[in-house]
Image (cartoon, rainbow, N blue to C red; front, side, top):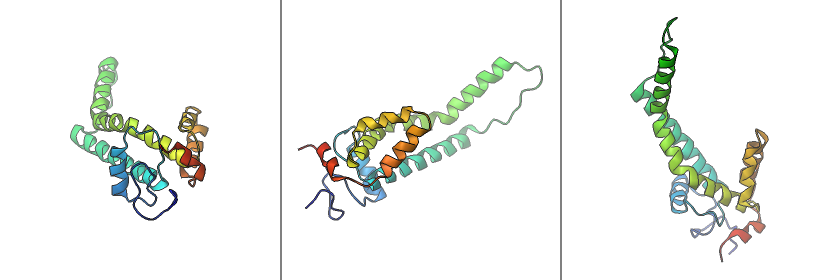
Length: 157
């Protein structure tokens, strides 16, 4: 059976085509820092969607707990104190999302590299993100590309 087969259970060291959101979530954490191998489009995009939704939920919860600052400094108010207060409020409202981002950072890098491998590209292509605007567009196109048989070279024997 070819490793590009879209049916049947896939081993953890193989991409899981047609992964469900739950499967993508579990595989992300099981393969958290694994940069070798491949990841299917469904594994990648389901995780990406889950991650964005969790970030939004954490942001909404943070704003609900801390509140939104709608105050405008009065003329002649201490601008430095207002800036410090605003910064502290921003830190409080972004704390949960920041922790989530830090927890998933390495895993997302590894998943991105595995997704690039499935398209027959080196994980080093991720560095194209450093090119403003064009880099992220190119990466999205790569991530959305179909799997290629030459990506099997990134599997461990």
